[in-house]
Structure formats: C-alpha cells, structure tokens
Length: 288
Image (cartoon, rainbow, N blue to C red; front, side, top):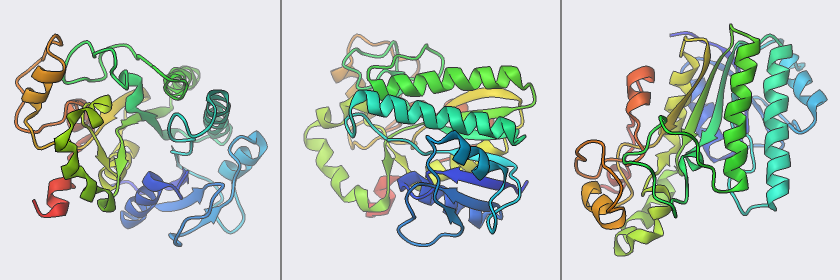
C-alpha cells in the first residue's frame, strides 16, 4: 500500500470527516483545508478560503507546521446541494473553488487528484426517466440544476488539466446521497411512500464507504481522468429493486436482471477498476 501526504479540502464536512479518518487510519499524512474547523479534532487543520487562488496556491505549496509539499489532493469542498444558496452563488463558489484547487495543484507539481463529482450528473431528480437501469457512467451527463451543471463542468475541466499534463491522474467520484449511521433510523419510513426517494433511484452512500472509495481512488494508477458512480450496494427500500423499476419506470429498459434490493446506481465500474466493496449497509446498522 502506498502512503501519501494528502490535502483534503472540505475535511470538516460530513463526507470529509470520514475521509480524514479513513486516510489517517491507513497511514497517510493528512491536512484538512477547510474554511470551517472540524467539530472534533482529527489532526491538522488549516483555514483556507478556496475561492481565493492565492490562498489555495499557498495551501498546496506548503504551510508552516502543516506540510512542506504534497503527493495528492482530495477535493471535497463545495456548497453541497441545490437550494442552499442562490443558483449563481452556488455556481460561482463551486466552480471557482474547483478551478483554484486544480490549477494550484498543477503549480505545486501534484500528480494525483481525487475529487467529489456527484450522482446529480446522471439526471437527478429523474423527472425525466434515465435512458436505462441501472444507471452508470456510460451515457452523457444530464445536469438538471445549476449545482449539477457545475459538477458536469468540473468533470470537463479536469479532463483538460489532464490533457495539459499527461502525467496527471484525476479520479472523479460521483457520490450518492451521503449518510452517517445516525441517519438510518429514518430509512424504514421510506417504504410507506417510495416517491420520497425516487429522485435518486433510492440510492445512498455511507460516509465510511465513500471514504473507502476515496482511499482506493488514490491508488488508481492510470494517467488521465476517470469517473465512477459511488453508492452503497443496496437501496434505501425494502421492496425489491426490480419491482420498484417496473412500477415507477415502466418504459425504461433494464439492462440486466436485478437481484433483491441492489442499487440502481451501478457501482460495477468502481468494483472492477478500484476494488470498491461497500461494507456498511443501512440494514446492518439497524440490526435488520
């Protein structure tokens, strides 16, 4: 296993906390770059405004008492969903922060980037049905919100950074709706009305499994950019996935037989190329 000196942007957030814990537990040196301090200390933290390019360059090049150079950047920081701020504010914040991180990493000579893309580029909230089920990385992005448009443009932007630097490896993780164990008590109630979660095909990602995907992506060796859907192996529902697909997406082709409550956000590519295996199903956390 390789060990790296890693900056995690947004390390104080819901997914970020799990990522910092996972990487530290596996022997990596981690510094959290976030405008907010973590709720509980997890290691080195430096306050950085990612919309300020000068601060980002300084943060990645070296920070006294934190690091003197980095091997990798994990970029998670963003306004995390539509509606939290006006559309233009989300676009300006997220695209500016991402450009600054990618550009500053290039200046700092960092050749390994993992960043948070989003399931939203698959077409959420699926008011227009997807082209097929399970959805995967093979069809063109279908952003339906300004937030999602930003994520789509980030993927396009990273591809150009990789074209400029053939040695750069950049992995985008299209995370599903991030959950922590305390969130799972609400899941059984979804069975009463599947439409409450139809917007993302009843998917979710446990923060700890999201962190596992980040760790595995850091060891992905192929130069260039690659994107992966990252979800848990099951849905939030108790009903079989084939039954849900037939009832709510009757005209949508199903590419292969669906087994039990398996996810409709395909993680086959992540399993195959990253070795990703979700370990934290919500039913197990509730003892069911």
